[in-house]
Length: 253
Image (cartoon, rainbow, N blue to C red; front, side):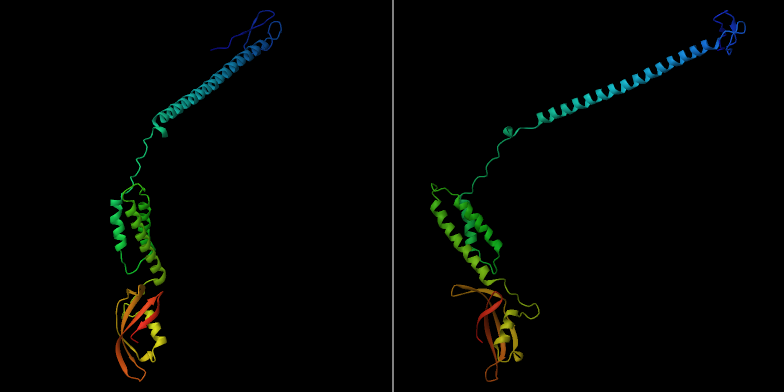
């Protein structure tokens, strides 16, 4: 598109588009073009600013709409979860575990009263506590109440004997895998025999638990060849009674 000629504001003569002064009267004609250019530039600036403003407003509206949508979705999720959750008052009450009856407890009590082990440990006392606790829950008006009281007393006495045995006897001594000897007895013989170095251990028994006048002991038998007071060798069975891994008495030496 060709640029338009400039008209002189004084004499109305047509001038070249680039002219600054009228060729006929000498009046200034370039100011009109400058004003037109500035006016066009100003309109272009306002249009650009308007477009930018529309973009900013659109983005802000999108953000607000997005936040409102997220809030609505969260509220829907919360309401959904609330509707799915059951309040504690609506939960079914747990069914109480029925108390064991005397008929159910008696077999367990009988097994405990008959229990006999070579070596008791503290874990063996836990079943006694459990059965006694359940027997004590039998109400006084029950017809088995008297039998339960008697059974409780027997269980307490048996558990007391087991406790005393654990404390008195201590850990069970072991037989050597090499020749069956028991270290506690060997130490005892070193301090007891007239000539320990000349003695001979012929045969050892396994360590067992025995009752001597109602008292518990660990016992072991040893077939021993040793010199007597006159220097003669004798072969005889000797017996050793042990507590807390020490010989407390012996027979046959």
